[in-house]
Image 1 (cartoon, rainbow, N blue to C red):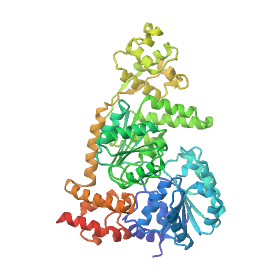
Image 2 (image 1 turned 30 degrees about the vertical axis):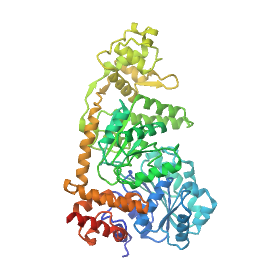
Image 3 (image 1 turned 45 degrees about the vertical axis):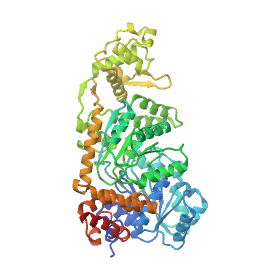
Image 4 (image 1 turned 120 degrees about the vertical axis):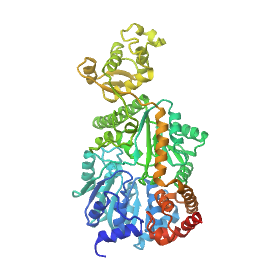
Length: 607
């Protein structure tokens, strides 16, 4: 078989158990097999890793994979090894026996993929070892980390551009990332490639993900309602603080949910045990800071909830992308409030970044706030941020539940009048009290009950005025001085509305009760997509066997078989190993290792 792509397609089926490429993969694999340097921007869950793993086993030589994420290295090595591929990693968490295995394969020239962290490449002994290892290709994951304009800049990535010269020989370079705008892509090309690479920018659309945002009311209750609508499913809840991680985990456990915390303040043994439980067992919910999940390759995460507002659109997109990587329906929910906006802005202003970097971060936060307060399809708003036009999705909260817009010019003028008449010196709660005519101690202390604006907004509830303040802030009509007790002031754009020179449309906030109902409806739809009612008993039996095998081998459950594979087994019920070979995700090595056990369960269900 002389055609490299034909050989690759055969290995795609025999090793990985896939009958075809996912959209966008084949063209990249073809370019890599042709020896081209490549920069590929592909959404999380679209199969970036296959674009270097498949060429690595199609051609001779060693492929060096550079990733900042030890957990991702470990999971990908486990999955490759289970598929019969000689792969390994060198990192600080390895047991001596694992390092010995990897070095043995390396010395014998049998290793096909070697995963290392960029920090390890700063060690002279590592570079010397690689110079003798016949490295033919270097794949750089999370390549946006090389760019100071990227959302997760890491200075250790800057040395990777010189690695080819240090190792010697002609080193084909591939760079992959899920999020990189045009300036970031330019930075990646300049810093990682000696000559211009072939650039692929794939659609950022993840149509299987439902997007939803809700204003915070009683956030713990909102999170609990969302999780309970996904009973028995694996999910991640992201929090802005360690304290909230532990509080939410405790609240979920008290409600009967198997929830575990994860943050840097926990003992390493506890973190590792919790992560392993999340990987190996079904139905575990992880409450975590955003560091968790960066290297998690678990494909069957059915939901991601942000209990606090993410840092920016790129971070939001990357974090929700950890759900539904198997292509099946998954749910996302982001809760946000004015306190979140204040915290994120404060983090930017008090950071040590340059003025230009802070300007960009303000823009990115503003884009996220616009997404949170969007008046129409969220997917359109999100994809437009990445420069991609789209139709309405029908799979976000705004498309499914609708949103009512109204001419908010007069309300905006009332709110801004309250700000101006109080000298632009007060925070939102005081201003809301003035608008609804509430004689609080502070209102009386400053004689603000005598202002013309006192009580002009009594036709609305305090919660409605808070929503109006959030929306005015999101579109840039008002702003807060976070270093002076959160005082509000009116921007130049705001003054144009206040003077009647410009109108503004606002949206009526969706009722919080719709979130739980929508999530429960979507969960039933997702379950129907996986298997029919008559196959759920068999699916549960197959999951139980998978859990048993995964625990015995101390590997994540998906390393045995993914949810999609189990769903197809439950639906198609193959009666032989030959028939099982046609199921998605069943390669030669897994068929030999697990086929008989799963066929026995299927045959037992047929009896």
